Length: 112
Length: 114
Image (cartoon, rainbow over the protein chains, first blue to last red):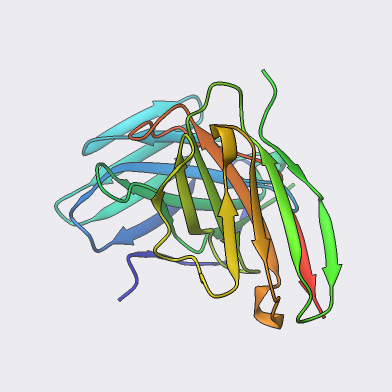
């Protein structure tokens, strides 16, 4: 079982729709949960991160973590064509080997 | 604030040749990472430095890959000899320190081994 599972898509939705992106993880030691956005031929860009279970909102983006079920989500409201990109979930263990463990990424397409 | 700088942007080499990538992290960032991103996959950590010391290199194929961060600033990643399966984007990232979740990535070096 991979440490972080993420559906690669592609996920295609019309402009203005609410987008839901999800990941599951297997290691309970993970403590930081991040979402990165990666445009084609660019490096990943950090969108937001959270430390605990619950919701964190930043503009049109909401990150949700459920540690009991090892499930993390990113919601995008009022989606725009400029949101078309690959979204990577990443998880970090605090202490010890604390580099990021990434999912495969979900390729999102927002249709104008 | 300048971002993470990487060079070259693209490199094409033949198998069994050697190649080196360079990274200059954000000023003041003590932690530096090298990741390998194969097409269609998420980035995979190769090595993590804290200042000029190695924190984690458990996923670095040490028979052919090496990395250094002399003086705790710039870093180089070398592959010698390259294999076809090394074709990937090599990403450098930096953060203020360990346990600081905000890591900033460079644009990467796209390596093609033919």
